[in-house]
Image: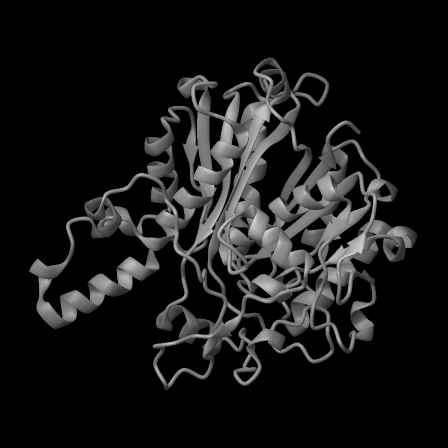
Amino acid sequence: MPTTAAHRRRVVVTGIGSVTPLGADVSATWQAATAGRCGIQTLDGMDERLSVKIGAPVGTEIDAGDLNPKDLRRFDRAMLLALAATREAALDADLAGHTDPDRSGVAIGSGIGGIGTLMENHKALLERGPRRVSPFFIPMTLANMPGGVVAIQHRLRGPNLCHVTACASGSHAIGEAARIIERGEADLMVAGGTEAALNELVMAGFASMQALSKRNEAPAQASRPFDRGRDGFVLGEGAAMLVLEAEEQARARGARIRATLTGYAASSDAAHMAAPDVESGGAVRCMEAALADADLSAADVDHINAHATSTPAGDEVEVASLRKVFGSHTDRIPVSATKGMTGHLLGAAGAVEAVLCVRALEEGLLPPTINLDDPDPACALDHVAGKARPAEIRVALSNSFGFGGVNAALVLQRWGT
């Protein structure tokens, strides 16, 4: 029997962790984001023939926990990023010894999975033959393996799911993990996204689609959400995880509750493989359903973290969808587009932005949209432009849209409201 709103359990956030182009943990990422710093840079060692030579790498050493050198060689970078973000989230939630492993699960999304390992082994096959392909090649490339190693390292024996829905993967993972808790199938879920796709093949593919910014001469100004001069997104890498729990369990074990996840929805444009739906119907239905799931109205939303990748069509369509959903309230809702600083982390993007929403709710501070020097009239909103803005917010909406016409929306609320 489906769980009704009246009978479902309330889901809270008790831990957050991240590894992003802005920093090795949540604190560093938040400080950089609220300062308006940019993690986009010129990439070294790339094929000179690439038309795009900029990206947003994780520039710090990845702390994935107690792994020996042999294990490190068997893990794709997407797995290591997921382990590092989970390690921080688990410590933040004080999980050790306080949860039932059989009632604790994992939901980690990734848009592409272990493509770095795939490229390395394909090169080995061509240059040195089949015997040089790693016996760990297959598990290292599987998109669900970050969730697998997270479950192993933290003894999480409940549901273990992977959502592969392009740029909405992380948000779908978080939302579907919340549904599992609401239905009573688990008491705790580690949920988020990871991506490590900064390689020549992926960049060449996106460049061929004319999806990437070509501002090679000015990396820090390349990602320009809602700006008239935007010319594409900048590819990044990273991971972010949330520890989600049933409220009654979190209270019973004395956990610090950071926020409440009250709404989630998913929809499909069913319009085009890669281009946004110019009618914005799927995005509108998704946001409206997420608000209904949270039992909130458009007027209740105090802050939006937009998907806003800095593509000419995508940003404009998102603004149109926001105006359809929020109507006369649209111009009173401050909007942040943080991909100007982080780049686009594909399957990890929605998870990173959910973490930023949690921190914004806690701190009463909204991260800025940088590089918004010449706002596009077609993208007119109450932009948090240039610098962070203090604001007492109770409800935040985070949008994620992806290739294939997939949409996800998360509604997070300040704890105690």
